[in-house]
View 1 (cartoon, rainbow, N blue to C red):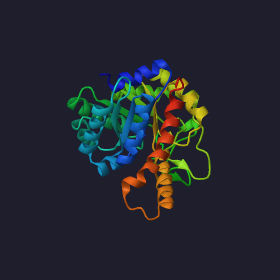
View 2 (view 1 turned 180 degrees about the horizontal axis):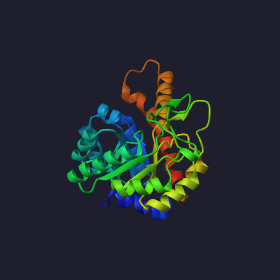
View 3 (view 1 turned 45 degrees about the horizontal axis):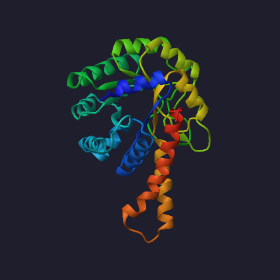
Length: 292
């Protein structure tokens, strides 16, 4: 069975990107899984520290294993990522639970401290499971998947503030990460009354040329279709989407409650929620895999 790293590298060769979708409940997981199975595509299920704290670290691992056992065939498979992990303790926990990948997020730290802690995260994770993928982050883009009134404090989007190709090369060489998520004009969350910033496509190209390893785009919600296509052509192989799913979850729930005012059975209300989330997931996966 192919590892996640092999799947991502294969996407690289094909000029497409793997979709990464964050979930925080069963409905979101069901919706992502339904679309992945329908399109026969591998996808990554992401759970941040907060999300896996709510679902349960071992519970989400068991759910992914159960879905793969029942539905995985051919190219379709769910991978599990411990998204935005800030402590070495949580890195150890995810590695011990058999996560396919772990994102150590030291992006808010000064460069040297980020390198030091990310390198330690790689050592800890690989000591437990040599096959686990460890991803590092370079350049702060905010932390919350939510509707924004303004730019997250400290987030970098100007060209002069973004990580350079030289910094990315040093970071990868000194940490030993398997994948890198650089700040390239992207942010976490979506603006309430404005479009998200445009991506710096040239910077993606420069970093990709320098580091060679797969590049990851965080903060995929709110990015234009044309920027997604250009980013994939420039070297992005894995794209994170979270806020758009949360918006769809709420939209579906509000619609279901409005249309079924007397209904109290959750399983009778949830199909509308799944429908809204599935629309988002399918649209994104078809865009990321332009050959579909």
